[in-house]
Length: 290
Ligand SMILES: N[C@@H](CCC(=O)N[C@@H](CSC=O)C(=O)NCC(=O)O)C(=O)O
Image 1: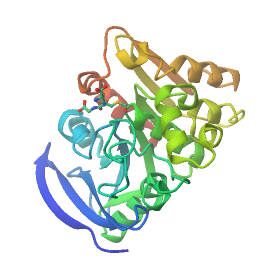
Image 2: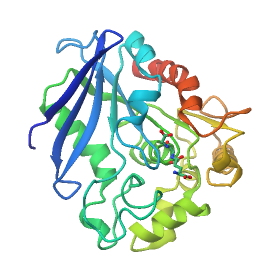
Image 3: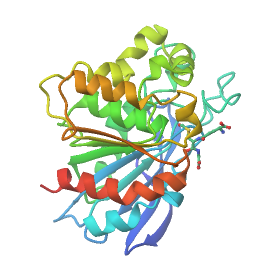
Image 4: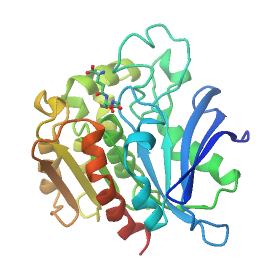
């Protein structure tokens, strides 16, 4: 695995936010960027547990780091944060930069199976395996066996599906802000799955949180979702949190395992995320530090 290159470092809440890049084999050897926050408490003898944050459509590794309001709570709880990018960059595929909801900035946290996307668009492997391996090899003081995952919108879909697919051996808990909860039933998911997957929307069911949670009867889950009732994408039925909640209840998960909270007046923006980010970090800390 090629070494991480440090691009910048900033002190924040006594910890450090560092931007790295590395040539990613999952992304067809394109350069991948990510931001990593290490709390001051992290050391090789006391590595920090880690919370991954997956961003939404149009974002890079910087949006949540700059506007998400995650650092103070993570510093207090002694939790490392990893902010990956949302897609490969510069794959030079025709149509890659034509729309905000497909191609660059819109990798959907799946491994594409359809040409020409499948050579570069392997965001699932990039997040689940490649990034932890690269950070581990760089000997960052992070305990990758103690990880949880969160995200926003497309990244909320990523957080829920990676958690539901990988299980508690990989992630102890999942939370999401305004997640795309039922992508096979909304325009964003329909476009992404038809574009990236050989089997289209049918194959997309493997990457759909509402479909996945239906098969979790008897499993113990730790999921927290916040979505705003003033969110234009919620009103346009891109998010469908009610479908996810209904499927969770049908599979036998009560509020103690799957909480779906609809927050009055909040929109889809980082003003909403930054309001609830500290609470999400503290909620994950219960599972990461027990
Ligand atoms: N440009 C688009 C809207 C794009 C948008 O709202 N992106 C959200 C994520 S949406 C779901 O994944 C986002 O996080 N944007 C970045 C930010 O910093 O706010 C349009 O015109 O509708």
